[in-house]
Image (cartoon, rainbow, N blue to C red; front, side, top):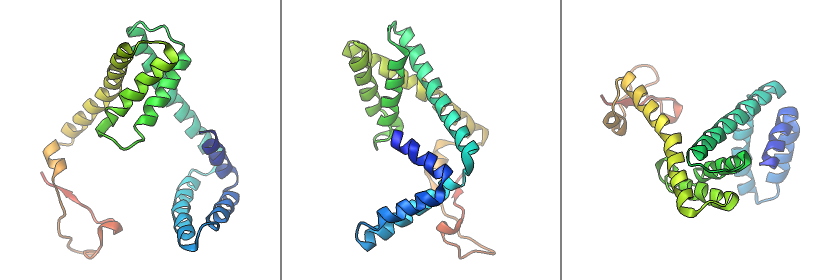
Length: 193
């Protein structure tokens, strides 16, 4: 995480320098692979450069840190409900482990890996039994996921959509100007109602 943070700071301060380093690194593998890496990293760098300047990066860092601390505070509140007497730093570790678990492709909502890593972190760093840690992790995941699910359902209802309509999309034939546009060119997909 530290090296990614340093890389982002370098990008904010010296985007041309970072681009030259990426070009240098991409010149090491065979040309075909290097060109593909250059293409992928170029798009990524172009997107990050849009943030432009230290002020924007600072706001991103503050927002990111705030969300992590708020999530760790929620973990701490669930821990208090379970009468765990753990350091707040343990909850930051659990927060990191749980969030890393959902980066691995798995089930919707990360159900399974989330509970496994969150409970393992609590057992490892908190001297809590495995069954109490598993109950904590399941409850924790419910506390994190259920508000998002309920908010999503509320927004679907407000937009007059239902889950069946979202699961069945039909591409409507385009007509008028730009009718020959491909989906990559921004052609829209209509949701069946």
